Length: 141
Image (tube, rainbow, N blue to C red; front, side, top):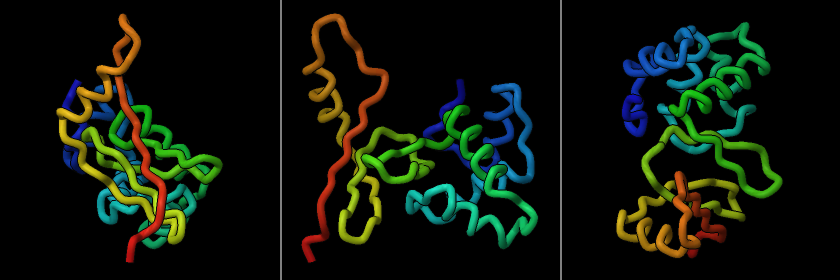
């Protein structure tokens, strides 16, 4: 499987093909929108951004594109409690800080040693394929 932690518009076609899918213009535009402004948008926000390039696209198509990108592991779905799903193209191991006041979400790089320490607390015989860490709070300023 290709290294999708550094997925680019150029590698999207191959990654989709490896999953038996085509790189449609809609999928490409949705993916490019996520790469352009890495602010963890919701599907509705992605839809609003895509409309300027593809005026006839429907919200259902945007949802389908996002679902395909998540299934192909070029985008990560991020959920915060009962809020809408947000989408993150950063697939490197990282945490998120969710600002409860502004609603913004920021990526936080995690040192590999910290991830190993977190995985070390698992019960014997278990191995985590993924670790999701979310910080919640407010800007100190």
